[in-house]
Length: 87
Image (tube, rainbow, N blue to C red):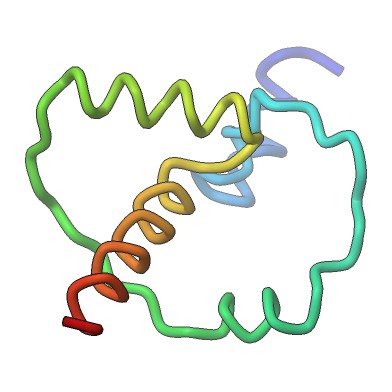
């Protein structure tokens, strides 16, 4: 199959068809019940600026824990809000 045929085939799935994860998936375990419930929560897109040093540290943490930046931000914000809602 030529490169152009492969490109046409992948374009049928949109941009997501062309992009794939660069992190290999070692296990395909079913998510725990509480994880499935978390995934059903509505998500919103947020555009905000953060310091480059914080972003770099978050990327390294995400890579080390095999997580996405989205997961890192969600976990950090949940802990932050839980801490300040108790006060």
